[in-house]
Image (cartoon, rainbow, N blue to C red; front, top):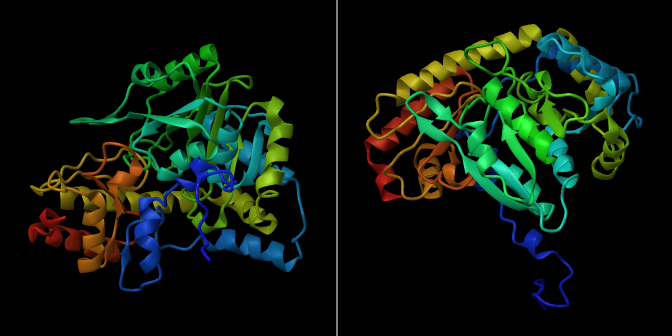
Length: 399
């Protein structure tokens, strides 16, 4: 007997689903994910636990028996807290009925893609991009196009006009992550305005991933599409708690979407996840109401670590580094790399440093690797030294 199913009438599974491959980050990391000898610079998180006051709020809720179903769009008090946070941060007045908390921010993106998926539809992704974004489109049966940012002496850049020029007649959604994982690119407000106006005119859904909104290096907060958009605009802004409050394992994010789709968000949240973990939502409320100090502390760490990475990489002959203006990643290019997968695997095998291979972030990135600098100083510094030694020994030229 065999456990495989051949193509043909006997196979009920969608070909595009069976053709999916594991992304390069987890493919590399999973075999050694729990190895204490590895310096893990591959995932988008640091080594500091969620601040105690957030954990304590969730523990209190759990101890009090807060373990029952709640609204699939999130607890009303959490949605209100998100509204107050956004209003204060951006000087706006968001209708709380536009806010939903379906589960993780990635789930919010997945649902947003489902809302536009139809036979023959296309999605345009601003790249380099986190690989799961492409997967969310392909799982929904949406064909994917990419428009890649450009490296310039002044940083990573991409104009709204370039994005618009890449739109096809069948394009139903444009995905923009700003600040960007992995490049740190941040979309200027005027480009946001131009792109939103185009989407409004053409009826294209703009999916704006703003999860790194508080991780910026020359401002308190990144420009947000929420500052420009009205309730009726074809736009879904996705955000979450993972990055700004060091809550990656909590899997709680939120979306701001047109108010007329409140019922659809409740319905789809129920289908996918039945809502975010109920007692965890109390921790999220605590983060929003009392978390500015924690955000500032984390931002200080990222600022210092960014400087360490720039100092380590900028003067090395083998590395071309464009400094990030947001998020907490470096995405350097090593022209001698023939395969970013082979490079990352060899680096891991020989130095016990885990980085992400560039190919997994979209087309045109196979000479890059991504490094997360959210770790504390000692492991980050050790990881940087090992990478430089690996390059100095010419090991990358054998990949």
